[in-house]
Length: 258
Image (cartoon, rainbow, N blue to C red; front, side, top):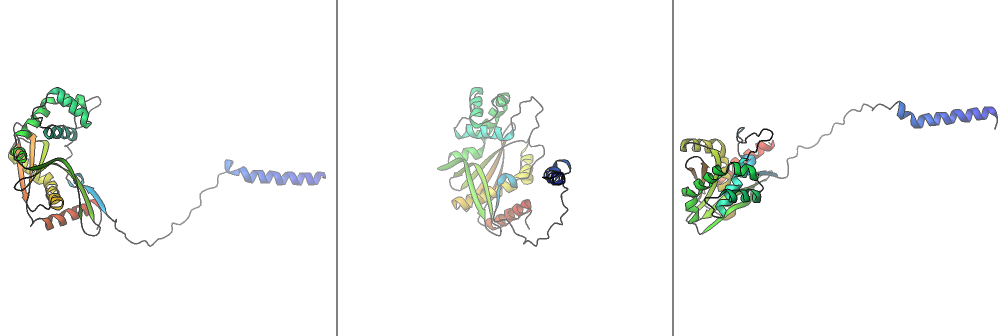
């Protein structure tokens, strides 16, 4: 190989190497491409799946805000402890029972012990309520029973929830225990009207769909007071169509479906 040929081969090799590794030194810029225009159909979801909690109006002050290091018992945890006691007929739990139940339901045991006197009062008020006593006389009753119902339409809506207590006596009775603080029957009724009415409608409609109930009484028992405050709502076969449409519209609005 002559000297000229060697120089030419060297240039070719150098050029090839430069092409192979130039991205290390001069990365290629991303080309600017025009986004394609796609004419896609406006499809609705095949099914909307929501829980009763999704439908219930939220209160910005419903959940206590804990500071760093502070032990706070969440309302959901307090409710689980109260329901566990009632389901097992523990109407005046001791501190040791509250601690054991908190651990059983996955609540903060130390926070539960810090509020043991409150939790004991919640359970005692629940057991003193006329709704609870009426449920105990029923020949069939279920605690913490899950349900799933469908609302027909396009798209269909699947609603899930859980009854605290549902009982069948002369009529169907749904009892829901609330730990919201209320100091009067008027405040309890106002709270139901503003926040829990949709929950009552859903519970009643679910009883109709699951058990073919024609008449359903839903009672909210507010236990966070000196005495239980009860708010009762009744629903009949004349209400089912209206409730179904109302819940469907609320579900569609929440999902942004028109």
